[in-house]
Length: 68
Image (cartoon, rainbow, N blue to C red):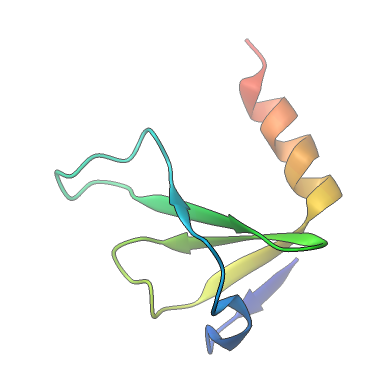
């Protein structure tokens, strides 16, 4: 896992906001896919830091989160 404080490596990515994010100012998470990683950021601070996670780790996280 890598935190990019500059936001430079995440430029040019197509960001997608979570369907659970509302416009009411609550928790807003966006993700973007790269070749071998998935980037995560706070949509309220798009210029802020991003979290880069390996695609395999992201898939494992999503599978875990989707469990009943």
